[in-house]
Length: 106
Image (cartoon, rainbow, N blue to C red; front, side, top):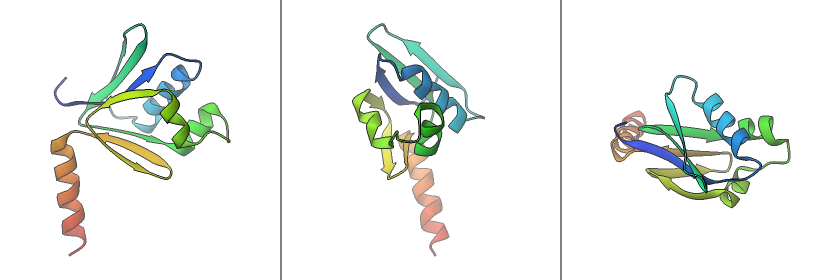
């Protein structure tokens, strides 16, 4: 996989549901899940998004995106967060997104 990005999650009760939420938020993306025993690497090429709303669908209405920090031991790529989402991007994807944003603000 060229330019893999995504979270590295500690093994725990919530991990399977977090992976399902990631898959739902990225329906047209090939996602690779690599089990390393003590942790699971979830990755896609160039860009991966996870929203609080989808996490709540899988883990309950009280689950907050910031709660992900408990199981997030590392990540690959550049990370961008908002109050209700997290996005992992490759450097190339981040540059392309910034360029589009800049052009749309003209």
